[in-house]
Every structure is written in C-alpha cells, then in structure tokens.
Image 1 (cartoon, rainbow, N blue to C red):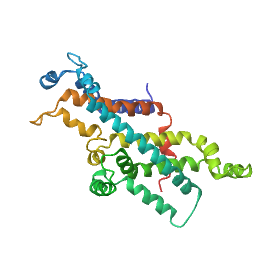
Image 2: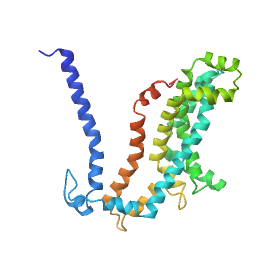
Image 3: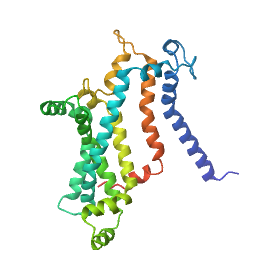
Image 4: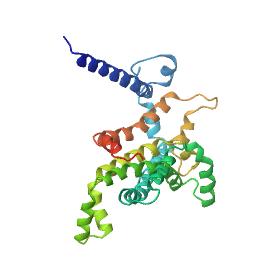
Length: 275
C-alpha cells in the first residue's frame, strides 16, 4: 500500500510534467513549422515536419540582411553585458560593504527601474539619442538596455559580494593589496559564478528585447526585429516557415547559455537582497 506522501509526490510529479509539456508545446510547434514547407503549414496540421525541409534556414543563412541582423544583435547585446558589469560591480560592492542614510531605500529605488516597461521610455530615449547623434548605433541600444539590466545585475552581485567575509578584505589590506588589486585578484575569482549568472540575465533581456532596439535603429545597426518585415508580403501575409526558423535561431544562444549555467542560476537568484 502506498503511503500518503508517496501518492502526493506522484501527483506533484504528474502536475509538473503536464505543465512542462504544456509550456514546451509552443516551442516544439515552432520547430515543426521551421522545418515544414509554408504551403503544408497553411493547409495541414502535422506533429512532425511533412515533408521536412531546411529551405527556411538556408534562406536566412544566405541572406545578408538576416546575417547582419543577427550580428548587430550580438554586438549590442555583448556591449550591454560589458557596460552593465562595469557599472554594477562597483555599485553592488558599495551597497554590500557600506552603510549610509537611506541605503535600503536607494537599493529599492534601483530595482524600480527594472519594473518599467521598455515601451514607456521609448520616446524619451529616441529624443535623447537623436540629440546625441547616436541613433542607429549599437551603443544607443546597449546604453538603453542598461536601464533594465543594471538593476538586476546590482541585485544579484550584491548578494554574492555580501557572502564574501569582510575579514578577507582586511587581510588583503594587511598584505599590501590596493583596492583595485583586491578587486582583481581576490574578489573577482570569488564571485565569478555571480558574474556569469549576471551576464546570463543581461544577455537574455538584451537579446529578447526588440522594442527599444527597433526604435533606436534603422539601417546600420538593425536587429532581427527590423528585418522580420522581410517575411511579410504586401498584403500582410507572413511567411510562416521563415518566421519560425528565425525564432528558433533566436532561442539557441539563450538555451546554450542556460544549459551551461543551469547549476548556478538558482544560487544566483537566492543570494540577492530583496529589501
């Protein structure tokens, strides 16, 4: 006879599996559509590509506009990750090591920026970067995304830095390390997991955020979202196969990053301060 705990565990397992299947169904369907001819996608409902084809991926890989779009997205994403880490590391260190009047309120105020929808700041950013002559540059998109990536980066890194004993810094000072030397040779190796987790979240947001990227770019730095117009016909019909293949390719970098950091993501979230 099964114990109540065993039956409850089985129920939860089935619930989790059902939810996982429901959540992954759109992704699976996206993959099917990406390997299926457009005409078949419009007329039939297949659980596997029938007949399978790679013509949609070939179109993307051999079309310079699409290649440039992915390259532009990669440039401003990695630029954003770099800028975010440069800004958030000293800020997180300050929140972790120093106490000052209103520090907790200031920390909460920083997190408020992460809650603002990108569409709300689209027009102000466009006006500001127009005046600075930065429209249609990778730097404009990277800086705009920093408004949303820096808060979460400070939150995560503050937790990791707070876990490092202050005695370690005192010992380093006695040993003759400068503040920069302590950062470079002692602190950074201790929080490298936190830096990687932070980079992941910054990468995911900047890679997936297309509202600001589209509004701040036109030709030279256009991301995937701009050239998605290629798949639409003059009458508004969308080429399902190419759009699906492009979406699958957008999922691959984040999935690889997630797989590499899967053991550290929960720790990265749980170590952050929330108040």
